[in-house]
Length: 408
Ligand code: HSE
Image (tube, rainbow, N blue to C red; front, top):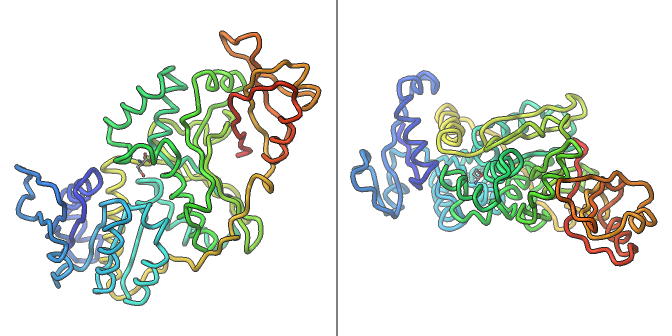
């Protein structure tokens, strides 16, 4: 079967590499069909690349090629990826993608188009890089009512935080290293501000609960406010800071979903997820907690998931795979600040006497070099709105940082 790859960046070139390296075994895995990359779409030139003859800058070379049945979209971004994917699906070609931004923002339209044309639109690589999570959630866990999902969903930020925690590295230096290793998005703002994790939360929430969740419904905070001082205080409490995406079932027509840095205590499975690794913990009413762990970014891990989708499309040319969800609604994702209770870490300029007068007995944390007018403590359980109200009552407090504490 002929396959095209759109976007020859880190992931796209990995897809071509994996297909070529495994060409013999792919024949067995597809039930006798060989997989051959026959076109690569990219606007850039790749002089000297051994695939030079396959390159095109014209999308129509793929759309109009009747022999191409499956297309891997590894371009990223909404446009022109959306237009291209829609045209391909309508033309009867299956599309597989690593493009979480597109699936999170416009996945429903594309899934509906695939449904109408009897093709497949698969996106295993869009969440967790090489970790199998889309199929397990859609199929293996489908007997459960999902109670919650929490994940370390961005490799770049997990790498940065690990470098800060374990090497005492400054944020900028760690980000530069993550970019050099090819983990970060083209614009790393999407990583460090939490937008990439937010898109993955949208995909997981849509899949788990059956209604499209859009990025603007998921309150998102990145890791740029995290300092080595916070890392040090939290270390003294036996925990680490992770960027977490959290999804909480509230009722059949309500969920909470948010992305933020969070304190994870060392006993948690999530605390030991380091470097570029990701983990997704799913809590089901029948199964309990299951945790999926693996490399969340990078060329070959992500290509591994894309190529698995290609194999699945090749195996199911006559049978549609059912992964999908329905329409969402504006009030489907509730304001977590008024509805989800948790503990909080607070670092502030304030006296213990004033903190205790409002918060009662709290657990104070310490760090080396702690200034005499600085306190750090863990609150009791409350909503974020309740916390903010209490902080207003602490005379003269100057809050430096607030971080959620997870109970996973
Ligand atoms: N920039 C993303 C990350 C790539 O660091 O996780 C994989 O989605």
